[in-house]
Image 1 (spheres, rainbow, N blue to C red):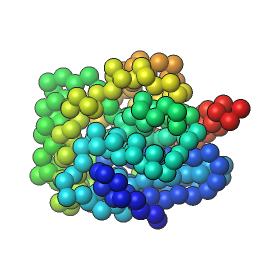
Image 2 (image 1 turned 180 degrees about the vertical axis):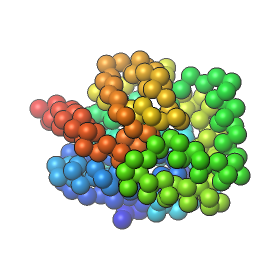
Image 3 (image 1 turned 135 degrees about the vertical axis):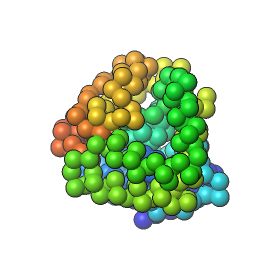
Image 4 (image 1 turned 90 degrees about the horizontal axis):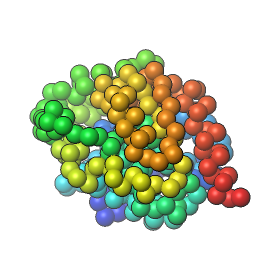
Length: 267
């Protein structure tokens, strides 16, 4: 593990392999180990960097929990500090929001983007705003996350079930509940809505979507695809973390994309 102190907080991360870089960004209350089932395959031909967001995994909790916009700020600063170029960034959920921010704000560094049931493109209505407000209370996170995680994960593999246990346990802690609540409150903030800014994305974008995810229904994926010019949209019969539930099928789609976009930059 390596650590780096940045403006929004301290980040722990792994940095393995050689070749063009791939950055892995995880969902709220999850951690970098979500990607374990696919990381070895990626490391064979790439430098793979997997981050734990502040207050997640092995990264310490900041004094004030971060918002989604601050996660995006952190991702931009992290890529600048490591001076990553010809980068493919893979982001799940709020990690997808941060990946999209990178594609918008650091076009010169990004070769391609893979989004997995991403946030940042929701057309909120009264119901979704109310839900985010309710989930923005730590006491509600501690009460509801055991049910909510099982519903959005749609666990089907031993790895999925281990992930559910890990996320549920984290959501029951005070730091975990505060971190998740701060993120949920921020999901309706203007800075989390990338629909208008998405037209600035010039890198190729592959959207992979688990259609059994109750927290991010298929129609939201269609909205993401509509917002990002030229993006490619692929669905899988999984929950929120596609690459963990269907690693072989996901890799069969993602690896050729990664190879293609990074080879374009080096030609």
